[in-house]
Image (cartoon, rainbow, N blue to C red):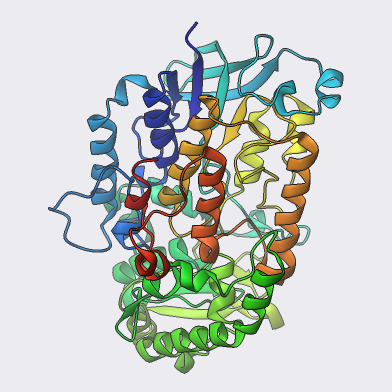
Length: 517
């Protein structure tokens, strides 16, 4: 009997999973709550562009069209590319749009039986004659609910959507104390561009946050209102945002994304020799980080405005918090249409926000570009309280998954897209390949005990040797090839994807290197 696989989400992770599940002969159904595909790319602020060069944000076997000449495509170009991928591989017929997944309920072994398992799913295999997943869905337009049953579920709902993250406020000093309007960046991004411009026009806008969405929204507000009604950006920490991926004529990818560079970084489970090499050559890595920092400061007047971070560029990469700043952002700061204010704490009053030292920021509109709670969205998908509790990681943004994909104690289910790296698409497709090889029984998972130990080992590594005090979620920006090697070895693929010793050591690794096993 044909095995049925449910995929939740039709963003880049869900589409990649659908394509590879189909290629293995299974029957996939993709549930998407929106009316169209693309996930976070379906609707963004007007000036949003890809942050990674497009050669690192692509499906392995589907190149960008020649018509896209820029290295950093616009939101429309990215969405068109994703749409073309879905059409090319015949994925649209497998997608149920406007269909929200209300909950997942596992039907099969009891909780006591599952607790006694020594192997994932009881047999270290992806399917079970006894176990099924019941998926309750709701039609967004008619509100009609249905129950569907599947043999396996792949969660591709993503970390950066749906459940907004807001700071905590002192009692009676939250948004309800404010006479103006408060919204999250997701609400602003959901507006069409003309509506968004009218919404902020003539208002004193404050944007909270200092990553990509915050900077883009601030740029749009400043373009509408100018210096007459400057946009205030409130941030906790400075960041090493660059305006491109070029460092004194060399690309960042050529510096960090090759095997030679990875020799100088500690890795989970490394042996004595690997640890020794990484330790000895750390000064060289530190020096490269300082060179990158000097190039960023050369291009951007960070020092002039007190925006040079106290942490290193290396720390930024280790936590996947680096980004590309909108062009001419500091020109807007110079002309006075954007004001920058640092504060570790904030609270609302009738007139606006009160910052550290009781400084008042008068505002009519406050937009929180403070990210999302993907972990909460993931947990709340499950009907079982036990499964919800199992998804709690060591930090609010981390999820305890083996290989960043499956939970040792949740059967017949995989999660794709909860690991940060060079590019969301790049990593998600590799994870999709791993899952579909697992579904095709090309390999088996180790024991639950071994998987739990692996998760603890990798988590400890992230906290002690990789991201340190900046750790919030699993990030393998500087260990991208290492992570792909681990997945390749599991699948029985040759992890060496280049031709020749020097190419293997010094060439940059790209998604196209993994187009075939």
